[in-house]
Length: 377
Length: 102
Image (cartoon, rainbow over all chains, first blue to last red):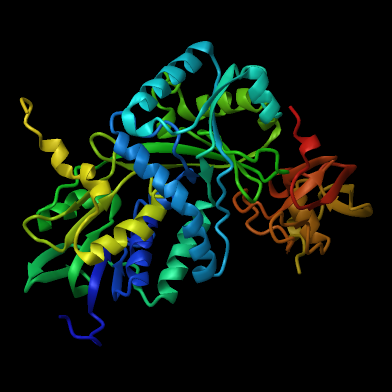
């Protein structure tokens, strides 16, 4: 065992201090581990500061039903995570699960969505996922602020949202209160397996731990091969518009429009909403804004306060990668593009499993080995 | 706390009101500059905590100079030139929904 007392030795080193690394570190610390978080700092790409803050289930898992189950499990457990954060960070992260809508602006869009959901939910494990297809009148009854161009919608009671900046801050605060040693401006250059553990180093020096968890987002692609792991992730740009704060008018999140707990309206080009020709090849921000105004005409009167883009962390098939190294047991990779939705799973399910030394069956599908299946298999 | 630079001394005087008080500014001032020159130290209350705020960055970034100008809420005082007869008011919290109906 690693002796206590040396500040450069821990039970587990988490590389990456965003929402994914923060959730893993919190879960590890709650399980009793001594944890060091090495964070590149605010120069990092930081999807954690640029995301859309949905806790989203509807439409996830097309092509991999296990991902729908995993997302739903996290959405269910998010209530517990929010309570833990309220207790351990000392403030509320504005999580709610009021149900989410996917608004459609043409019959063609609606038909495509309905067909996709029908195929998704025909697959065996997902038949009990409830969702509704609503026409304009019923959508209008539930969301009075919609415009005449909304032809219908899909609704799922499983969807919710959170204030993701508060989540990011709460994870930092809660982990520090739990005794996690958070080290900003600590980019990692190398990980070397040594004496049954790992030596992790950068320009700042070296730390050692029995376990290492790669939560470095896009940086995982570079780090994973150092410990026999594979994380072929690439950036996928997402853009977001936020308006001035206004009176609450939108309780439920849409997949591309949501009003925050503080009153600002966010408009995004969600990954879940890809596949519409109107989004591709057009000036994206103006297309996003135009669609959002058709959905909620009152948005036309609001000032835009900021726009930004951030980089999603995308694996080749868009699903998470969770693995323990076969050649260097004790090294794990945790990477996904929905770090907010999956935060509850990461903190409450994955972190204790990492500490126990074995990933749970529920994530067996998410191994990177799926990218290396021979074509004839 | 603030006073106009000497070279602006010849600028034309403009009349405006802030929360109903009659004040004077100078042509070429922004709304935010005119408020600061008149010793106004709070022009809005934040929507979240209600804390008082005053113009800060003066270049369109910080949104702390939000005011109601001639009935339109949440305008950035630092980006709007002062004009004669303007009615400027404190922005209390969020802009109201009825002001933003398209």
